[in-house]
Image 1: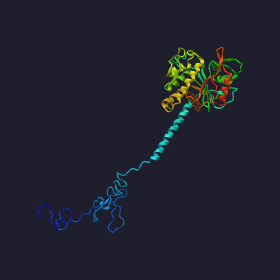
Image 2: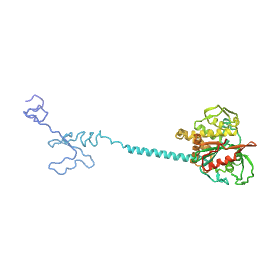
Image 3: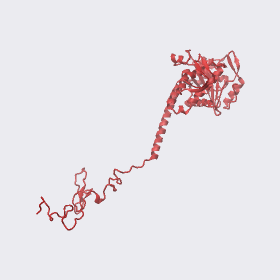
Image 4: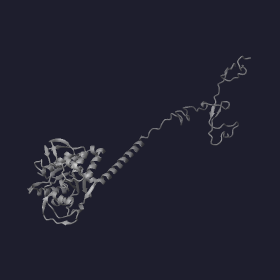
Length: 426
């Protein structure tokens, strides 16, 4: 008898391991059960019948070392964590499966393509935006009896006293007055070519002959009578077309493009680039232009710049000295606009382009590349690679400045042939 409830005797304990065997021989190692991933194979072999209806996931069957159903950890078959086919770091679906190395060549290629695409789209968009803002109002096809075109490109650059679009407050601030219509305040010929750029100022008081011309609005032919006037009177009489016709007739030089800017536009461009640094040659105080400037290097804003280029009566040499100041400032402005700090900075570039393109009047054949070439030509003059001068003067008559015919002829020939200019205005 055994006093333990439901006690076990030596006889009924059997030889099962871990249950207090009293036999003389130690128990044999217990066989671990294993998991079979597929359907159980019936005794005697043959095809196992599916244990579940179609569509129901199969469950693992468990057998021990004696063929009895049970549970197995996978040790007997080697399917453990970390073994091939398992879920460990070495297995195909394990949590620690290493990620493939990034394909840097492919990433760099995609990034490069994206950047190029964005830049191309931005450039094309900017081009069409800027091109649409150009005011192509001047029709040079109306100009008759034109000289033959020479080498290089000639631009007639005109600063007008147009007050169009300006408010009364702006007119007062910029000291422009309120005169109706518009006149030329400055005129220059810029030649660009293989031998550098040449900027020639045409004094507004230059004595010129008005030739036969066709009216820009009426289409009527007006015969030349040999009458002589100041150069700015040609513009006042029939606008840009007659001005081009008069310049070509009196110089023999073909004008390829026409560019005009008014008071407001000039001031806006200067402000858009953050002002222009220039060395003022002398103290200037002019109540008519509003200039009140001290001698020396300084940065002028739009209002001060406009007053500086319009100053006439405060200068000893009057119109000739004013044209020199105009050349000096326009070259400095072009140099400022063409710097990387402006061109590569959209916060400066677009306001500058907007201010300039809104206020420029050009000929119908003028393109953005022509305009860019003009600015680079002005920049080269400022940088010392080009030449700036006044039209050579031999004297005056009745308040009109008389050109030196011999020097003008040589100058025009050198420009036509795109040669280095040797003529001086002194």
